[in-house]
Image (spheres, helix red, strand yellow):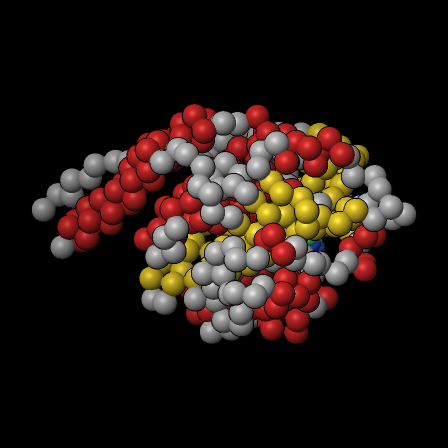
Length: 340
Ligand code: AMP
């Protein structure tokens, strides 16, 4: 009985992963549908056990866009930058099908700045500095040309700004995905809870799931968070993969064991961009489709961590992504014969 159950579970996982890679091979064309994203475009200073950088381009929306544009274009970006944000970075995004009409540039203020230091295991980090700068008076405006999009990804940002974007959309998107972080749970929990009521999918890491729910068990935490609004919950566990919850179902996607994790910054945003970009590409928002999407998100995140900042995401192409998804297939592909 256990043997049958195990074989069946493994069979399902293999099928999903096989389908995932075949689908990516076969539909490797860009869709004309769009995905609206909102989040930060920033400068980061990062210290990991492997090195240190003082000022590189980062921000939640930057990572989201570099990941999502591999699956869907246009990616319709909403953000704010200061006078110091490099024009070359905007051009690099635009050349990949990212629209920046919704990105405001403030001439007399600096861009958002974040600094973090990773612990030796790279799964945890300390935030050293969060300088809001232009974010202090950010009032996101959804351009008319963005209206009508069926997919919205609320990248990590002040919850009340995420809400403002939802409220400006004349037609509710088919799927609203929300990313957030412990910082907003600390300083804007009430606003966060208002947004949670309006979204379909929430992405958090395990520590944030525990903080938001007050539960230690991730299964109990998932139930408590889904009761706050989102029908689907993804709990990211860094190098230990990610869990997808929906009603009483749960699905697990591994993370690829990499020889070198150089810089985990942006892995969560990259995951979100890959996950939502894939769903927008296949236009299927069922639980089964989301299972595939978290494998795609994990594959994209595995690229992100290989270099500092979004550099690695700029180098990869469709063949690299397909090959990486196949590595995920191999990772969990095994036969099992139980005695008796
Ligand atoms: P992640 O590693 O996926 O959590 O994302 C890290 C990125 O998020 C960095 O590039 C930062 O610029 C950006 N970031 C850090 N803190 C915040 C915050 N409070 N709100 C929005 N973006 C942030």
